[in-house]
Image 1 (cartoon, rainbow, N blue to C red):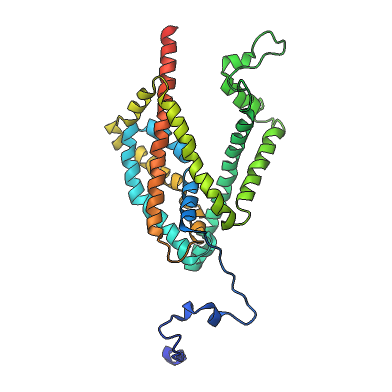
Image 2: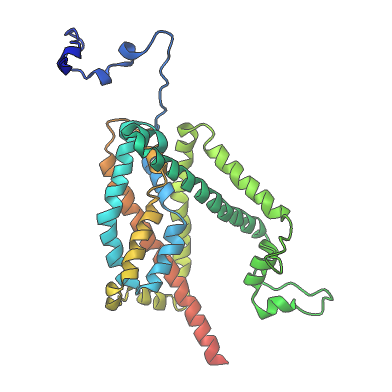
Length: 347
């Protein structure tokens, strides 16, 4: 039986190839005649990559879900499991995804397949999840556009109840609920009486949905060239809006009551396992881990990019945004609670 070493072919020790791994030869040495190697695009600068990650991470999870979890699990006490999960779970996994994408310089499916063919399913699963979440999130963008177009009216259509058919009073259904709920369920969703009736296509919201997808298409039309410019707006706009809401929220009567509630910890909630589970879930949801998008973003980096530093920066910015958005939200909560309480006393 022949020894395995008998099949090893020694390479000539050419001066230009000494000490170089065969798998790392330059394209000139490895490329076949007539085959042109495709060069992967790159971000214009590291700041574009950082802003892309921030734009991707900061979203509804910071503004909606995090304040809701704070309210559910004792205000300030929820910050304890949240910060612990961020350090133990969020930062390492974010660093892992950025490192995989930057090293393999491929999308999620290609990167995991390169590591091992058995991991191809991980990339495919992340692609399916990203598709489903994109469809879901763009519906929310549709509602945002719908409300934006209807906001150029005075008074706002969701601030007053419409008149009834005889113009002798307000719509009875709207008076029983509220003007905001009426506009949402009847004008925006136009819900059908039962699940057996689909109600047909709502053409105005459908046009808003088409516009939302058109905006997405224009943003990614030229890859990193167009996306790298869009992120300057998408990364800064949420903070501009939150600052406006913060200034307005802090000037409302009773805003301090909401802030006191937020930062007053309920220590007993630290023994609640659901608080820790939801904190871990929020980290995944907020940072966007497991969707494959971060791997794709990092694949457009220079190989020498410090992805560890970027993982820490993105994690800190994302968590700070969640706390900042909670301050805005709880200041408005305090106003609403005080307003409702004083109305009850008057009655």
